[in-house]
Image (cartoon, rainbow, N blue to C red; front, side, top):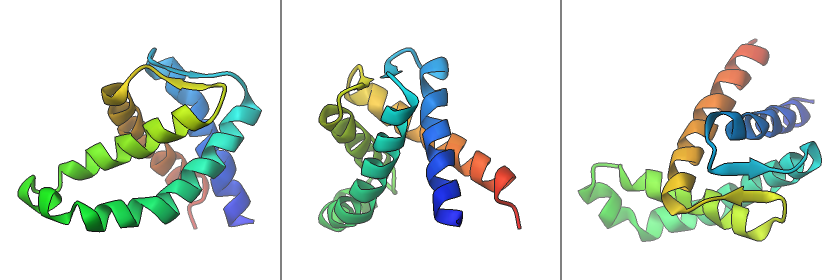
Length: 113
């Protein structure tokens, strides 16, 4: 049950993004659900590999390069799924940051134990 609730919360966070950033477009709720699943898989499988490969750059930038990696994951999912559009790479970095803040806030408020 918590997995389903987290999935729905992430989809709601994705649906909130176009209202806060005009460079992000999502066509429907079903698209947001699909994006939430794909983004979860990409962040689970590909992100740790990229973090390990870019560890020297991340250390030199004092961790700020992780924002670039998060934006890259967000932008890659936007290029993979029809109905989910991000204007450019730097918009994806900002959208990934905003998405993580929104989803963390909603998860904290709605799934508080």
